[in-house]
Length: 302
Image (cartoon, rainbow, N blue to C red; front, side):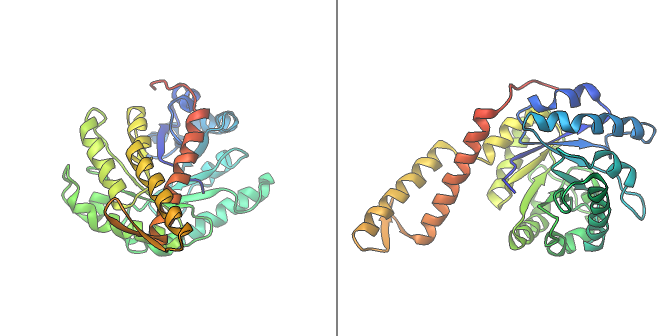
């Protein structure tokens, strides 16, 4: 899956927000049928979301939907409404372990079959919101339908309640399970995704949080407000200084290689092929993000 830097939640009940959600600049949208929709409005939200998935996808927008979970099952009503051409994936809330992912996989497969969509084409991003899901992060990540795992640590959210930590702005209390989730995702070859920063007015706090997440090894962020999109996209993209550093590293190594050497001192550091592989990967990512910027839609506030 092509890296997604910013996943922006849009309440499925807000038709006006969903209508212009492709103008936020987010790499992907998560049309939400779960926590942001009251029980009395679930049916209306399904109608709104299902009617707009194709429209949003037609603009090039990547579209996900967060579905509901009951005590025993994920919502078949939600899946019946949203599994359709144009949807890229389902954000799977509160799995307790790999069995829940298997269950969701079978339910989605049934809907893909009914809709004539290739089996397995709709991806899954489980969110590790329970203690069991954090314990079984690797087993969850290895499912073939899973494209990424999201490790959320919002203040007073599901994970704080499940784990029992005391939330701080610095986030030291969540470093252990965040790092474990990153390793699980990387070991399974899936994208590690962080989130959520809830104080939409505290842009400085968000900047600190997303910079820490990037430093740890996450490659994308769950977001609840359009004002966070630009910062997230920037945080998960190489900056100009990095691009210059890695471009010159490749040049220095290629010159050394042309002289029959397998290593070179570059900017005071020993550099060999391992470092150059990293440099080339980062430059490739930058090229893919540049393509997104060229095709990006105008930004508007929801």
